[in-house]
Length: 130
Image (cartoon, rainbow, N blue to C red; front, side, top):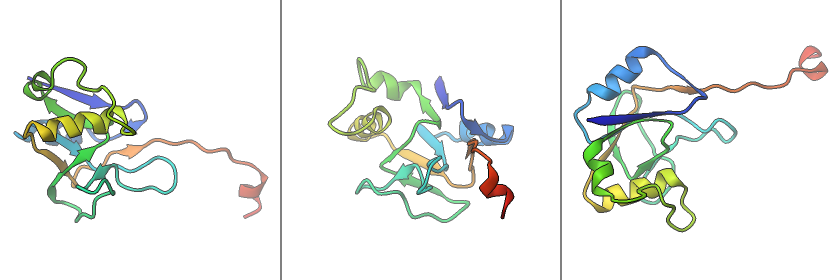
């Protein structure tokens, strides 16, 4: 049993979900980037900084955003009531990751799966005059 979190502003190929879901790890995220500048990866190393990565690799991370991630039920169950409760300045997603890591669960990021944030922008005269 697992749950798949998918933000409403993500675009992806159906194969992306299949690849993440078929990975047997307890928690697996695709690699995607902040929707606004700076467009840094939303997967983090042990210092809390965005990861350095090679495309096409599967790497362990300390945390990830929850916009495109599979989590096995046993992870959620192990974290008790309100596993998304915020810890300090961390958001709900990274607070969940911190608790999962403390319980010994691994968090993987599949950098071959790269969904995109869908963004719209205003177009005006400045764009026309270019």
